[in-house]
Image 1 (cartoon, protein in one colour):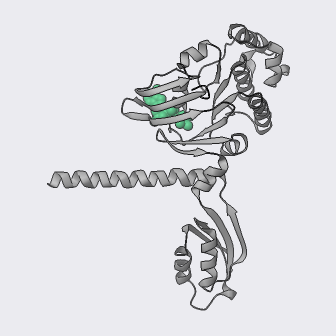
Image 2 (cartoon, rainbow, N blue to C red):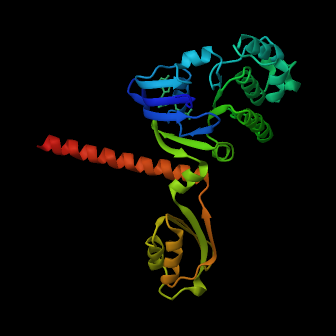
Image 3 (tube, rainbow, N blue to C red):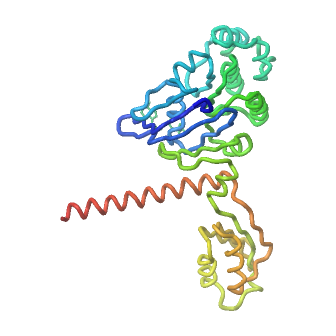
Length: 330
Ligand SMILES: Nc1ncnc2c1ncn2[C@@H]1O[C@H](COP(=O)(O)OP(=O)(O)OP(=O)(O)O)[C@@H](O)[C@H]1O
């Protein structure tokens, strides 16, 4: 277990009838920078709360560094930046950071923390006079006030403008480069794509994808094929038949055709097999102009994976419903 930073084993957590986390199995290893993605209500914050021992699972177990979350926190191995909870009001930033450094079992120097969080110039400002983005950076400073081995961040860049966000990620990356494990929940998929070396996708409390950003994109499998069809290139009978041809090309998952210029249609296809789709286009006698084949971005891959899961869940519910009806009829 020495190589485990954190482990969820068969973890479940419900709030009344809402199943927020449903059978979560997951191990975090030292030095990883891990992004936790998922639509609203997917169970991200609940999972982080369970990891930090702020909530107890109904099922399964959560461990940190081979012990309980509480033990790991008491030993000063974990720093966290959560969405909830206000900051102390009547103090200056430096005083608040000093307090956090003093009470931490492995507290760092105040100057080092202010520098690493990029808030040296805010040190003499009152905490209650900060902007939302500045407040977030102070919260981050509190999360790195000690020599933690794991840093947990729940939507850390909410409220930060683009430049502050970039500076924030540079600070965070320095923490990861120092060998710390970082786990962050985010709704900004480009952050996950550029910062994390591992991406987890939660959906209705279940882990539906776990891998590098490239693996998640590949897992979504799809590529986008875009081209133009010019009427002058088409056989006379083209029209609705041609849309049917496009829709039934090998690998096609979705099709979008727009006609902004008379005589020219722009076609965008999402396909699981770009080579086969393109070969099929030519076989059908179509002449695609300006053909482009691109991989899906993480955002589209995320939408594809979660959409696919919604579809499977709906089918499963349908089957269950039909089974229940059959049972009633019998
Ligand atoms: N204290 C609570 N009491 C009742 N239900 C809760 C509570 N906290 C969360 N939930 C519900 O549990 C589910 C998971 O919520 P959670 O906050 O963990 O998701 P999330 O992925 O962090 O969402 P978001 O992206 O919107 O922050 C949701 O359906 C939510 O409404």
